[in-house]
Image (tube, rainbow, N blue to C red; front, top):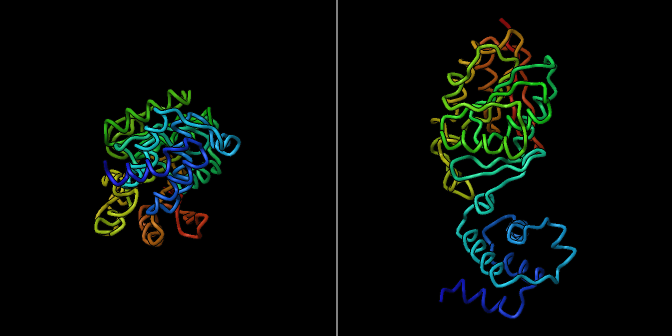
Length: 292
């Protein structure tokens, strides 16, 4: 019997109660900055209940199979596997999205990109593209809020496109289409009112690539050259020929990249360029309007 199993047996054998299992799991997940939340999300997944159930029924007892499944998930989380990969889903915007190791896990910071996109004064029947769509999070959030828009999402990887289509079906969003291909080259048309993207923007030698949840995510969705801007350069260059005159380009990026991205946009012919801060006060989204 492993030390983990011994710990679980000693702590849990005499109680299958929700409250005691949460305390046990929280104590084990010492390497996570969100240990208690991780334990709650994993237990909700096992019970197929929302978090309010845990607080309303702390004395509820798991059955043998549920306990076994919970122990397994906690053990995997101890090894660093992201919670979203363990549960197979992640909430983003107002949507519940399926996730997989083939895609980046949608993060709350990216909702800022959605918020900024929704402020733009576009035609009621606007055409909008999301580059590097992954799970489809950004495209689906925009399409769910603007049902008259025609939204296109593209991704280089087949598994990502398949997952994005699955998320569109499960969330009953019909005004979005997904294609496989590289950045603007995969777009089926040339005239978009807005292009948005959360592309890879981490430097390829950044130490954070080997830390935390990021260790388990596809590096192709994270890193982009020695300065993290290789893909952003391509997107800015390609977007010029795909946007309407007056069309918008919005890019999520790292906290130290705003100045460089603004300069790239100016050189490409964009105006009204600005950078939006996230809730932590860091540069997060840079946007510009094409002026030909």
